[in-house]
Length: 425
Image (tube, rainbow, N blue to C red; front, side, top):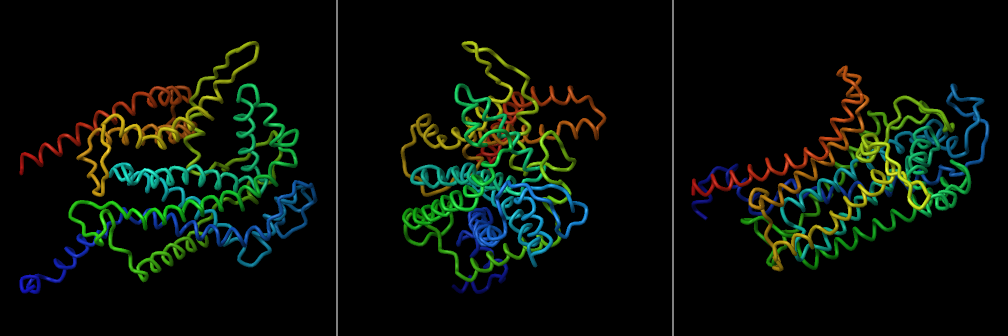
């Protein structure tokens, strides 16, 4: 104690933070939870004003350029919420920004769990919950963009139509059941309304509750040298004041984004008109990998028993994302089987100490990133004065070569770092 009292204050405070496990990467899960709370609160208010009906009316609202234009009640209610309800525009934009940050926080949380090995026993179910939350958050955000019935909504519905129709045998029947006839029909937006405001939020809230229960039962894995709370694998509980401060900081940041940064200007996109397109309307960032996969997939179509099988849509629209999320969910079992590691782990790994796992993660991130970048192949070709077909072929090759290069380079870096540490020791 006497030695500690002689140390400078900044040294002792820094050591205390390290012992208490105050690491910024542990905040991703908290950020996801807090943005979900904001989404739920703002969503309840927005649902009161949004009418999901597809009935056609003539717009006579506050936005002058669209007066006298035939629109759906869904689009008219979204415009009314934006221009005529006090604070409506702010709520819409806060809700939209929160949905984007929620998916980003879940992705970062999954990366943290993966690269530190936190998915190992007893964290397998904890990992699975976050894996399920990712497509649920993406589905919630995507269905939310469908509800206003603007041109961006129509583009999303067109993508859904193409992917569903590419399903062998049942695709056409399933498409007619979803849309209730021709696209867009009068059924799909009311259906997505209840999926977006009730089913998905309830399921996600249940997953968060289960995740918190598992955390109380098993505790959290920690890095070597961090102090626990006495139970194996648990960390010191976060003070209520610090948790509340982070929640209000999250709310403040989302409010600033909603007030100062425009997002989803549906009045500029215009109401959905089949066969028409609009400039500047793009899907949310987390849907970019699907758009990129559709863009670079060759136009392959084969005949099976006299029926066409559209691989150009089926493979990037269903096979690639299905395989990606299945591999994510099953990776803990796969690693356990390949390594034979059946032990319970309460200590996290540094990424460099698990070179193969880190290399696999880098390869997966590279694959996702290349598909995401391929969604802008036309913009890349335009701004850099390149041939569009050359850019497309580059991404077709890069999605296979890039992950292999990332795997090899990352593994060598990790092995080199650990070897240097051993030599220094």
